[in-house]
Amino acid sequence: MNDNLKDAWKNSYKLGAAVSRRVLKHKENDAIIKKHFSSLTAENSMKLGPIHPHENKWDWKETDFIADYARANNLAMRGHTFI
Image (cartoon, rainbow, N blue to C red):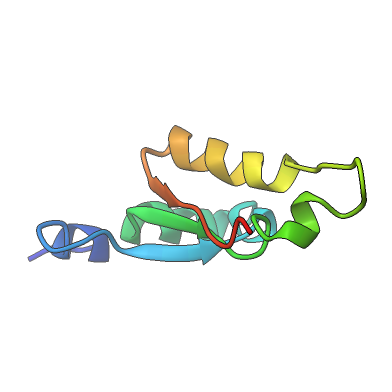
């Protein structure tokens, strides 16, 4: 018997969670995500408003933080609402 969700479903599909930097920075959330999930989706940071808030201004900090977290923890990452 598996003690986490991601291993219980590993032969069927990736189990994902929608996250933000705020969610990932909490130790309790970090532990739950690493234990139970195999994929991340950015809640809102990949939407046009946060990425491109004004003409000639681009802000990738939040998205980069989530992508770096996914890479560092061997988690898949799903792009969400790029346009």
